[in-house]
Image (cartoon, rainbow, N blue to C red):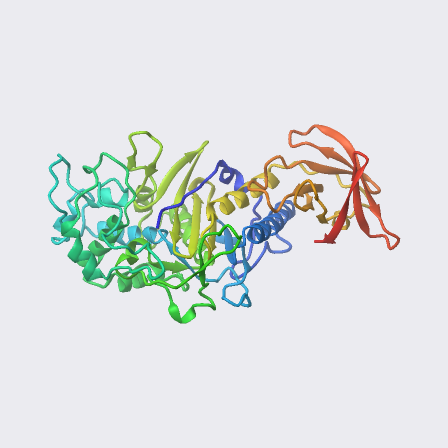
Length: 493
């Protein structure tokens, strides 16, 4: 329903940890034996931490299924599924699980419109009514510049947020048909004069999709499939939700957490006439491919679905709100985080939420999708932050006879906190809290000293106290001692 787009400066250094060689497809990790072994090891440790943290978040938040992927350049370097996709909780999620991506749909609709722009069939600053004579709103006495395609793409046209139907209202979510959208628009008045206020509008991007259909002479779904999805090899992305796959590859939907810690079931909906704005479905594997296409296009400069110059135009700021808090490109959300521009979009529809964060200058992207009303942006940011933290960690010197895997495990945090993990990290160990909103915040480390002794090193490099691990009679680690107290090792990792 609403675009959810969270980004962070963490994306700015993702390239520090990703190996030059990686494989793609399905659930996967960095290719063993990559030319740069140090970078491959860094990626493997960062992604292992991400897997543990995302699965912990899924369990603590009671999210049935989460899928996530990381793209670097022309490759997907990591992609995983967590949890289950069906009502019985038996079908495992994967990187190829399909979710409603809701407002991420707008990126595909914007690409379709810009293809028409490249062909000279539309002009961005021509009134939309020129292409859609029926798309004329009710009279408004306020002075306004015309409602244009550029205004619709940047959510600055002053249009109502929605077509005037209650399609975000359950339990049926009655999305209007294309004919119903067209029939109702004449009775809807603008919310604001055009180009004066940023107002997110699903109606606006629906009109962009209608324009694609009008000027191309093809049904919107057919056009997008033939001219964007098939050329990019996005086999699990569709302008619609594949009901035949519901409960199998297409995850079922769940609502927000109740006070009892449960989530209500959400029935599958049909986005119908709102499909250009909110009706696509996709896997995170495909979203990572889409991100890689943007990197490939920008790097090669050779036309592929779009011209590189057109993509640059879409990813630059075309509208910034009067308070300078919200900036938008042509379809893409655009924000500046430190020295890095981050673009993308988020999606939130009944039972599903998703996030696609792209750092063009770093050729890095993170995609997250889930089948519950929770926060995929937080998970995307956490994954990026873990990559940044591992990439920026100076490795400790290797200590002979110390196998870090011996100490990795889940340790008892009660009664003070949830159980926590100790994991191998840049030649030592680090703490990881599965319930933490920001997993990479204050990542203190344990430096091996030999035997079962380690020294605490803060995230600023300050050396602190020693901790000692204790073994049982079989030689297995079963506790860690710090400040004269101990925590039991509950299980290994």
